[in-house]
Amino acid sequence: MKPKALIFCLCLLILMLCGCEDRVDLKAPTVQTPQSRTEVRHALDPADVVTGIDRPVSKTPVSDLKVGFILLGKVGDYGFSYSQNQGRLALSDEFGLDTIVIENVPEDETCLKSIQILIDNGCRIIFTSSFGFSKYAALMADKYPDVYFFNCAGNDLRPNLSQYFGRIYQARYLTGIVAGLRTQTGRIGYVAAIPIPEVVRGVDAFALGVKFVNPEARIHLQWTGTWYDPALERDLTLGLIDQGCDVIAQHQDSVAPQVAAEERGVWSIGYHSSMEFFAPNAYLTGASWDWAPYMIDQIRKIDSGTWESSSYWGGMFDGTVRLDRLTDKVAPGTRQVVNEETLAIKSGFEVFTGPIYDNEGLLRVKPGYTLTDEEKLSLDWLVDNIIGEIRQ
Image (cartoon, rainbow, N blue to C red):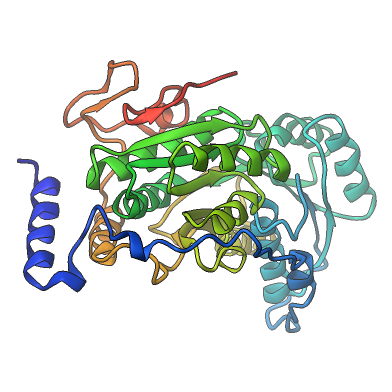
C-alpha cells in the first residue's frame, strides 16, 4: 500500500475509534444537508464592500511611481478581478502609491487602448490581469521599454515584462478532498470557464482530491466558454443539481454558482476569494489568492533598482495560493484529512504524481512519475473520474 494511502486509512481508523461525531462519513446523514432556500437571495453589491475599505496612509513610501491595473471584470465581482484589486489596495496600503484601475476590459485590442490610457496618465508600472492580455502587454512592452509590465497567467517575457501566477491547483486538490468527503450522491458538479491548460489543470487537481478520499464519486463538468456570465453559470449549475449533484464547485468569476447552490439546498465550493457571504448555508470552503506579497516585492525591487524580468509561479508554500477556512458545514473528519494533505503539499508533495489515467482510459502519468511544470502548463486531458470533455 502506498504511504499516502496508508496514512489516510490510519486516519480513518483513528477517527472511527474516536466516536461517531468525529467519524469521517463518506455518506453523511441526510439531516445534515441544508434545506431548500429558494426564496433566499443576497443582493449586496460587492463593490460597496471594496469602496468601504479604509486604507491607512503609507508607512514606507517609495518614489513617485504610479501603477496602473487592467482588469477583465469589476473590482467588486468577488472573483479574479476582486482578488487582483486586493493586491492593488495592498500596494496603496504599503507604499501610498497612486494607482489607476480600468475595469471590464475585453481580451481584444481594447486592451492596447486601455494600456495607452494608463501610460498617458503617467503609469510606469502596469499589471494586466488575464491570460488573454498577454500578447497585448508584450506589444506595449516592446513599444515602451521604460515601462514595467506584469501580466497574469501569460507566457510572453520581455526585459520589461514579467509573468505571474499561482499554483492554484494545490488548493483545488484540497477542495476536492472537501467535496469528496461531503457528497452523498457521489455526483459533484463543476462549472468551468474556458478549456485552457490553467482551467483543465484546476479541475484535474480537484478530481484527484475527490478520488483520494472517495474513488467512486464522479465530477460532472460543464463549460461556459466565458470567464463571467452569471446567468449562464446559474443555468448550468441548476442543471447539474437537477442531475443529482449535491456539491457544486466552479472556475468562474461570479458568485452565481454559489447563490444557485444556496437556493437549491446543496453544498458549494468557491473560487478566487471567500464567497461564504453569498451562500452561508451551502459554502464549504474555496481556493483563493493573495497577490499582495508578490506585488509588494516587485515594487520594492523596481524602486531599489534590483528588478529583473521573470516568470513567477507561487503556491501554498509562499502564501500566494491558499485554502479558505473550512466552515462548520464540512463533513466530520474533513479537517484532519485536509491538514495532513496541506502539510504534505507544503513539504513537497506534488498533486500530479502517477499513476493517473485520463477519462478515456489512457495512462497519462506513470506510477511514481511527477509531471514537470512544463507538462502541467500544457495539460489538455481530464482525469478518469471526470464526466465531460474538453470542448474548444
